[in-house]
Length: 356
Image (cartoon, rainbow, N blue to C red; front, side):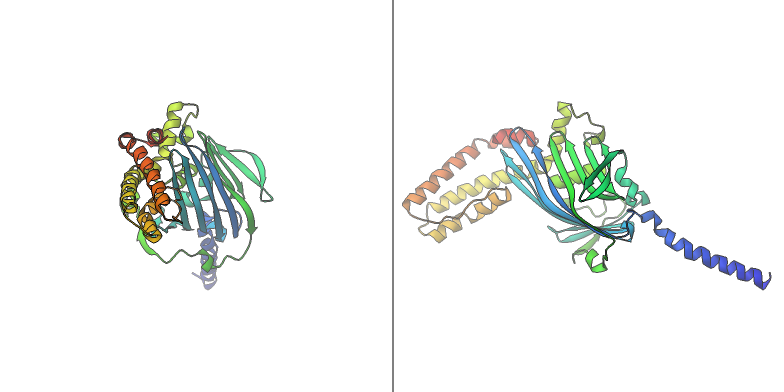
């Protein structure tokens, strides 16, 4: 082989290597914009049961660079049930996607779960519009985005970047809508970091990384996210194929959405009754304002978990004592009369009827 031909082969090999290397990231190009930040408003709600309504409120932020190969999504807010069932599910989450690796930070347990994707498709931009049809355009945050819709789901994407994610199913709505958008900005590495929590590998094999907390029903906000991803199933039926006019399907859907609240309430209501009885017995014995407030400390904490704000006691005399005892007697009697029904309730619909 001549030196000239050898030189050509070396040059060609170098060219192939230098061109192919950037192409390796092509599989992870989720957006058609190199970098940016989007701020969102979270809202929604609806009638969970005849006696209970849901309200969703919160904020979110998306930061990304390298065409979305590196992205950080932060969300914070609350889902509140009011009416027969009273509960507040506060949520705070952070998810970092870096090519085929997902890091999900859980603030309640102060852990980060790491998962490797088994498929490049799962991190590709086209996954956002799987099973959806383009129906037009709309303007959000001053930008014209493409609308993609499926049964109960609407998404509006600008160059692949979500400006609107919306669910409307069986009287329940959830909206994540962009309020401020900045593209082609400098997103430094320190803006895409996760909290300094301990990291646990999720693994690709089912069961790896599973904990007791993992087996609990998902909270309402997590179910909304699953619906938007197309991962939500009720009684073997994909929600995207559900006939929304079916009363049976509607009840199944709402019971699935409220499953975490149902289990929380089944655990907390007996605790509430016990705490009421203990607080009443305690208040009957004390003589000072400080002691009276100490009597209701545990009760106030339980009610706060259930979305009810119980005030401190600000005055203490015989008249105030009798008034507090009378209110507690009524609450204890009312709750005791419902405990049999509560223990039998199999879902949020039945439990809500018990508490009306």
